Length: 489
Image (cartoon, rainbow, N blue to C red; front, side, top):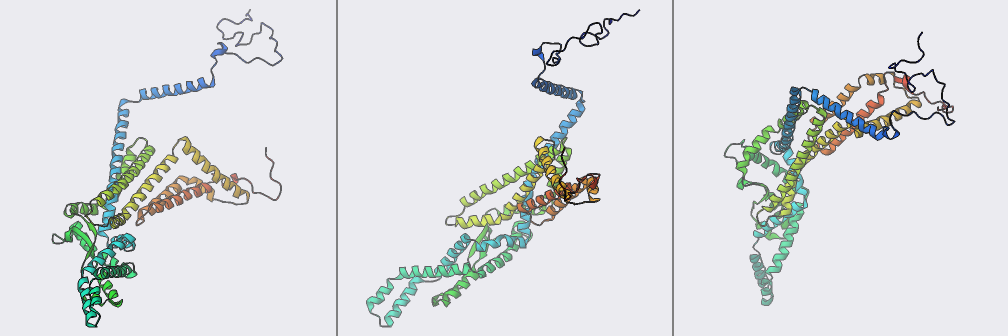
């Protein structure tokens, strides 16, 4: 006859199995006491200890994975990471040369671009003041004030003026020279600030650009060179215009001023011969070096184990390179002004320097803006909590707007399922269109980059808005009617 008591080792006990040999214990009024573990209450696991156990378990699992990873695979990953870092660093350095190469090709090889660069100098106050002083000095050097005063004194004596008064006129050379200086200076300034001078300036720069191109690139052979290693504007047309206006204002002695040629220096360097090779090389690489930079950077990203992080690193590297070249241009400006010859107008020289590198700085800002936008975009598609939070917030806002329009009766029909099916490829197309527009823009600025980024983001927002899921309008909330709103659970 089988015994009704459990056998030892059967797994049933007073706490774990059904004990049919004893009556049930009475339940206290407050309900059954909480179940207790096998140990004392002080040894119960808490939430903190549970979190620590999870972290310890994850670390142990990671250690197991690392231990089970074959050594040759770890070595392969290490080589890929090192190669990606090297390529990204090379691309960052090449980006600096690319900006300089593009500027050189446009500044030296493109006459219209060169004229567009230097044309604003004609309206710069510092440059106008420097040219006014230069032309005033040249004109006054052609007028013999002492001879003019003697002529006035002799004319007064011949007209019967008392001798004392004639001698007094002879002693007025200082005031006469001062007044003549003011007259010439005001006349020159009026000419320099006129529209005619702007036309003279542009035409003169267009004529000298071929000389600059041949001198810096060596295209014209060894006989082509800059005069005194300087690029300068001949101010003879300005002097001729001033001469005419002085005669018209009543200073007839100005008609005796001969044709005078004097120059206003735009570019000067003692090492034109030395830098000719570098200019020629940069001009040749102007169209190819940016493409090479992109290829090298793309190779570094493709080679990396974590390509998203590599893309962020490449973008940050190029942004830092643009910052460094911007700082270098500022430092070189100070060095350039410190080495000007004595008596040079530093304000005008600084303005000329800033104007010549204006488009280079614009290119630096544009490339830097592209790098920053790329880094931010690569970060936002990642798995980090801030990136997920941003994406979730955008989806909720767009979804709320779509639901509100659906409740007003909007229908998307087959558009929603189509966009949902091809959502990834639509995103690729939006990015490609933005990249093509940026690549084919003649001279993009940072503002152009930001506007293209805005429209790309707008395209992604529209894509998200049109994505109603595979069910389309059937999964949308019902349209709102004139009755009361539906009760909520």
